[in-house]
Length: 588
Ligand SMILES: Nc1ncnc2c1ncn2[C@@H]1O[C@H](COP(=O)(O)OP(=O)(O)OP(=O)(O)O)[C@@H](O)[C@H]1O
Ligand SMILES: [Mg+2]
Image 1 (cartoon, rainbow, N blue to C red):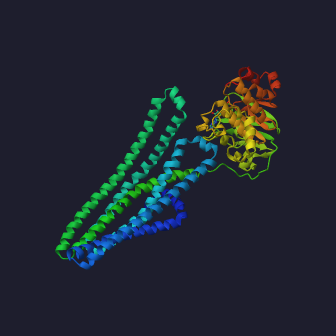
Image 2: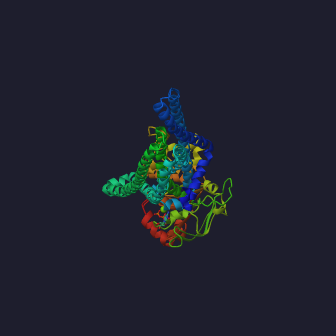
Image 3: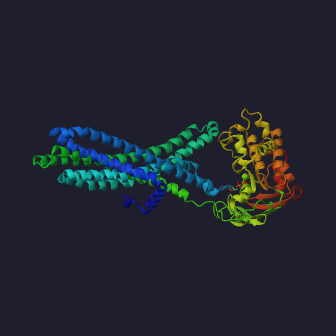
């Protein structure tokens, strides 16, 4: 069968085998069990001859005595072998699923932000669920076919030859015909399989969006729109699956019809042979039994092409992900701690090649412990700029230096361990408040550190009012908390990290004065003694900054202190009048 695969398919299957190979021992058991099954089933059919001729026709007492015993033994062996086959193949299948899933997940963890942000989540999710299952099903099916079914076919053929070579000729003529039909039908499978995978991903995507965006759907009346979207992708999924089912069952039906024609030929020939005295009833029944025994495995061999193609299509998309390059991490410099001088040297950047530069020739120096506030219109590149420091994206031109060394020189995790980040849209995980605070490497912090950070970030205030305190679950993305509470948890997390460099993308949501003051207070503590790059929407933040830079369409158009820039009556002054004129944070 492998000879029919194109090189890419062969490669995919080869790699899938790589996931099976570590389970050699269990695989050995499976092979042994399957071989036993084939042999036992052959034995069963072989027993039909003495059963008919000796026990029933010749009425030989001797045979009548051992015959039941032989059948019991055969069935017990078959049961044991069948169990061992299922259990060992199941074990291998589930192990393959786990390893693949872990490999894909590991890749998700280390893929560059660019890749993740430019690919939809739905198809990524379906890879973790649907594709890995398809692959395992394919692998175990192929193993079954390669070993048990092909052995059963061989045993059946041997039995048929043993019972009557002439009759076998009829059967032998049929086999190549069936093989050709299998080949013709096989082509369609891979195409459908690919489409099914795509549509499974789309179904996941639409569903995910509806659940996440349920409030928007409700308020903006997205009910019928979303339903229509789902029906569209689901309909395509249904149609592709039906096509697959049709072509598969057509294959089975055609094979059966051909087999049926063969069977009638055999019956006719058997009559002729019997009249000539060349065939005993027992031999014929045994021959017929062997032929029937072969039917099911042949059908599976036919079907396996569909499963094989499905497995290849599923495996292919998994390996495409697994083969995606990781974030670039060639740096080796990993200091215990950094002082925290940050410098951007003539940095330019665009998200999609040269087409639309988002940052142009940015130069900026922040001394250790100082604060630079970045202001500018929405879309001017503020978030992009600060994201280059922890290397969420890499600058295309120019250099970014931390303590005078290029960020590219740093070992990636070492670089990031020195940088705290409070992002514009706060990300919380579906876990307790405590685990969201002490996230990742912060997990090992002491209780007192945790409480101290919670205190400083004014988290204690609301945690104490919650029935489960720090154990309170925050819901998906933190939906069970208020916006201000989420912000404070993000600030608390950054406090707990206690890194020398802080990036603060101030959230623009409006808060009441009391909450605002609390957050402001938490931020002030967070910024003390750290090099801070703050994207500021609050007047108090900009006023206190050691330096302010004004970004406009990716360029620094002004820089200086608040007073200097007000006096200059330029961009900042007009921004200031629009944005910061009252002391409340507003949307820009
Ligand atoms: N992940 C991304 N992929 C492609 N383009 C992006 C991405 N993120 C931002 N952009 C584009 O880059 C430009 C700058 O975006 P950025 O988020 O840096 O603006 P900003 O100054 O932070 O705006 P705001 O004040 O609204 O947060 C925008 O035109 C935006 O469309
Ligand atoms: Mg932004």
